[in-house]
Amino acid sequence: AVVAPGAVHVPGWLPVGRQRELVEACRGWARGPVPIRHTVLPGGGVMSVRTVCLGWHWQPYRYSRTADDVNGARVAEFPDWLVELGRAALAVACEMDGPNGAVMTAGAAEDGAEFGAGRRYTPDTALINFYDGAARMGMHRDKEERSGAPVVSLSIGDTCVFRFGNTETRGRPYTDVELASGDLFVFGGSSRFAYHGVPKVYPGTADPATGMSSGRLNITLRETGLPG
Ligand code: MD3
Ligand code: FE
Image 1 (tube, rainbow, N blue to C red):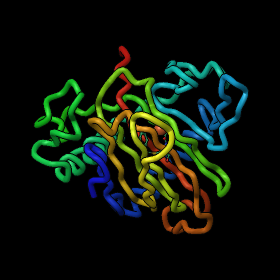
Image 2: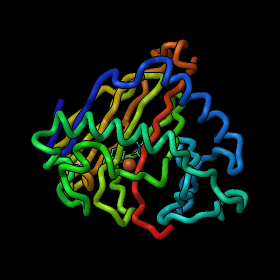
Image 3: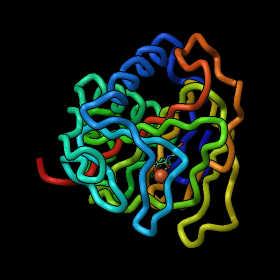
């Protein structure tokens, strides 16, 4: 479903077997080289979500190669198989978006038709967020990337309420969408810089066959636009 221009929700896109593989991979990355942690914000606040990154390390509010705010280690490589998964996801979203994914890819440097075929999208960072039943994510915009390329989001485990807002304010108008295990959401074009957050997770709604017996996992793939 097209939720807003360039914002496409594809329920149940990722098969359970691939969800399970992704959960296993995320468990490995959560152990190191940079252990998963609650991000500390510059004002001293601590995020309730736990996060681990691939390719580039996100710390509020910049990307670095090493996790200077955790253990100083270099983050794990972004694997090629995850680039391929991102391309497949974007191709599906562009198909639902309109001719050549033109709305989805507005503002991206790449040609719409090429992106539409899922060829040139090359995410170089992933943010892996783990939510327990009490975790939330406040309304925010993702502004650290130097690329207008779409963001690919995959959800596994407990269902949540995802709040998709506008580009002007944290408040209304917004649209609440339930994100369940296996759901794909892609944000491009004018939706790329909209406010969004996760006001609620529904504990106990995960299917253990996914490898998540409790909690919610969200993986976002992005192009940082940063050199090499
Ligand atoms: C829309 N994550 O990591 S995923 C984040 O479920 C983040 O963990 C949420 O917001 C989560 O920054 C929401 C959906 C999402 C992710 C990135 C976006 C939506 C987005 C970037 C731009 C616009
Ligand atoms: Fe975000």
